[in-house]
Length: 290
Image (cartoon, rainbow, N blue to C red):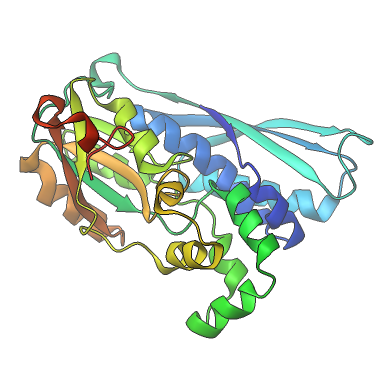
């Protein structure tokens, strides 16, 4: 799996969240490969900058190293490129890749998903690493947004906005070690639930979601109201509080929810798998039923 952090880097660099985007970089790669049931083995990074700024890059590497260590993944090394004239001063870009392994007989590819399977949504811890082009546009148009957020919540706005992406490897590993079958998994990134969840589901089936099954975290509703963002754009851009999805047989639901709870993660049955033939075309919205 290979990925970057996207335009979240712009805000993170302005606000000195360098350690946190190191975590984001690892998270975006590991969360993708574990959807197959794979165990992450090793990670390498690529950092490009106009001129090396030692303190910034040390913090980035610390974040990368901590995330790899927390998820039993070796940090083998990487490449740092100075490109003056291409990147401006104190600006850098990040990319990384992670290699994992899974026995072919244990590969999770969605082919076993069937009608009436349960969709379990595991909480995100915030915006993660997607949707920041829209976030930055909202910030540009609302200069007092930080003050308004903090007056309502008594929380630091940028601490909440720039929280690093949660990595789901350890909780997924625990579920699989308990021999609880997972038929499909989806990392909810750019495109939100409507784009990411249907990818793993056989074409004759469709995810049917219950929007009342979880509470959308305050920061998403705050950005929606401040930015006057339509509902469809919110769904198509953000994770809205669900960072990772599992599709399982209903008999395993309670055991999986218990493991999530033991890992201090809120998890919910957010829907079920239905057959497309049971719905009219106008009832299907961007690949899902809501």
